[in-house]
Image 1 (cartoon, rainbow, N blue to C red):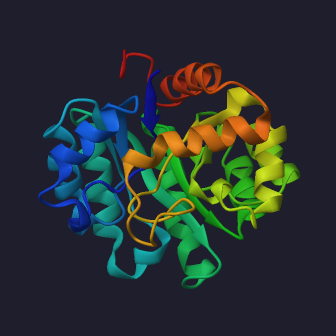
Image 2: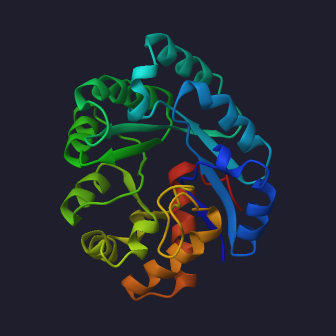
Length: 258
């Protein structure tokens, strides 16, 4: 069994001094790789260094909607210059997007659109953050004639919203939320969506699965999410794992994990 955590903030200080142990424990549960998103320019170098320090780790660079106020047009120019250099193990633009519960969406929009345009121009996938803005994300991608691939990270929404985004080239990130019985709408949606559109993620150290304290999430728990998904879909974990692994490689690159 091979699993990839498609969205894990492994650069966060929470993991300082324990990354090797976390990766070793996760590897015993089938985890062969992680993708680390960049959320603001101040952290980009830390993200890069963390990814390069361990085999199987790759990263993205972007400006998260929570942090747009910390940035200027110069930072977008810097992002483009970094990506133009095609740095080793940098595989996507993000985490970027919109969040109706944190900040002003009207201020986030220009940053999101600029990063969509940049990813499209340079041929990178997108890693998307969307909180109560799935329709706006869809409209923006459609208006920008998005034709690449994208990860709709930490999905929580309706079946109709998910299918519209899948039709635009999005993969849906399946995380710890499905392990909580109260998340009935999301569990029902992920039970019905095409398996070929799903990838696994932890969003560690956040989005803890059931039984794990808030803020203590880890790639170690990725298999818990797989097993929960298998249960709600009525499919075998081994089969799911093989398809989800192939999906993650289709999203980010077929040569990244073997």
